[in-house]
Length: 425
Image (tube, rainbow, N blue to C red):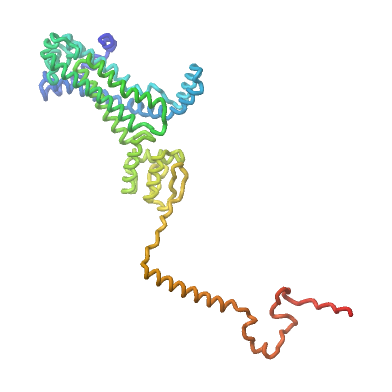
């Protein structure tokens, strides 16, 4: 570890300078030789580094999601060229190039922190051995050696001998108890961070080897921290515990506000957003509008949770627009089924009210009377005209004029008829 830390000695001066600046502030509040002054200086160093690494964290999220999207295609390539490893690697690189993804982007925050981590280790190790380093002079060195965090010196390790710990003004029991607790907290925070990612922010509709790999890392990383943690000074454990807690909080924020599509976190987020939009009839925040815009742009490619969100807006009489806003629309707007097919939401058919026995009998009698009356009227209107009483003109024997008949008999054409030819006798 000392050899690796010496490789990053070029950055020890900037790291030590930052720690000294924070120490001058906290020393004025808590005292220059206290563990609070030096411990909070290390915590502030972590926060400063992590703030500077936020752009890399955003890039890591985008890369991780892009890799999750590419998993089905990668699996097809592996199955197609399982006997040709070289062709498989070529096709993988071609896929990465076409989609603009980089598998190493997910490791950028850890890789970027490594120089600062080893530089801090080198600074604390020099404090333990009594050597000045960077901008830490002899007076600051003596002040740092006197600083204790809950009875453990900043430069003490779990594996240190009792004589070395006593030289730093502490007992071996205090050092081992404090370092053991910090190692457990460090491993637990790493496990919870990875587990939170796997259970809430992973697309559950796609089963890929990437998920199995992430699940394996969920158990491997805490074990690695526990094994290597016994060789870290207390100050480095403070650094690593702080950065784990920062990562956990940062990830919780991302999962809550910008979850992975298809994950359980997205289902919870869209449910909250649906209630908010239905209550206020608008999408308030810019981040929410961007997510609604992306859902609208997907069209029929929406997942189950996104279709449910669109259907919820339709039931509330709202329609999502292409720019991420919503407008009031028809309550019978089209909704989508599970396969993405739009259907029209119609009102439910109301069941008739149940009547009592007397109402049913009274209604039946009224209905029978109405039917009898309608039959009587139909029978009167259907009588043939020949059965009706003749007019006064017809009684007098008057014949229709013009040699035409008033009505054509059954089976004859209307209009004048041809005279019959005389029969031959």
